[in-house]
Image (cartoon, rainbow, N blue to C red; front, side, top):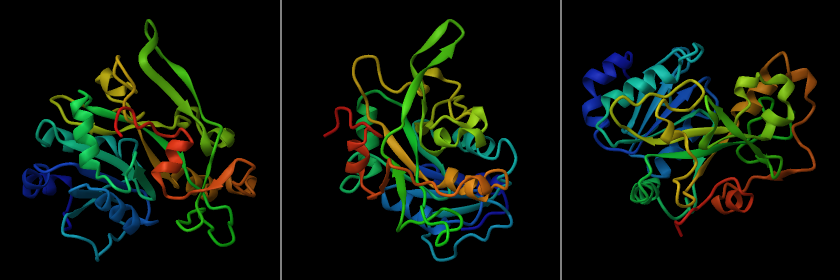
Length: 288
């Protein structure tokens, strides 16, 4: 269903759509893999998907009735945070949201046999209102076949090279918060601004009054930014993403400096939660 803008959606459809979560919000920066991204979030169990798309990007026409299209300028600094924070404010308290970009795919432990709703219900039982996700870079290795470095059939990822550093606060390191790095942003860091090198996101969260997402993918509520509760490890998930590969390959400042993303630690992505857990890229916590 197409809307003129976010105001139109909030007036005409938000009360009904936002009443039934979990909800996925996809920011389309271009037209790459729009259909596969939207189908993926619906297939893993999100009840609705909201696509924030550039006015120049034509939304898919052959998708489900529970996909909602809203024009949005993807190139301004608050292209994600401004509409998402308005959706948070409009949703009932306790509604689960997930946000991602086009050509990004959420995976969570045992996602082949369990829905995202089942996972989030368990997470609530552990008194958690947000979930840490790692952005795992995917990339094609054959630029001749995939000039934008995007290929679902020939996707690769780094099996190692990930690390974490303490997150600084006003009075020392923040409790249960870390900055995570790795993937293409680490290997090609000379082409990535320092502020965009982290691969951690709080991209699954539950609404509460006054909740706001910041532009660095953290929330103003610091407990939302923690990787686990104080007493044991919690679930984490992975957002498998072609976004960095696509940007590095299409950006004039980097495309001619990169012959290939492949290296000796590249492995074929199996589109499997088991593979991601084996590589340590997400944590099942106490959920079995």
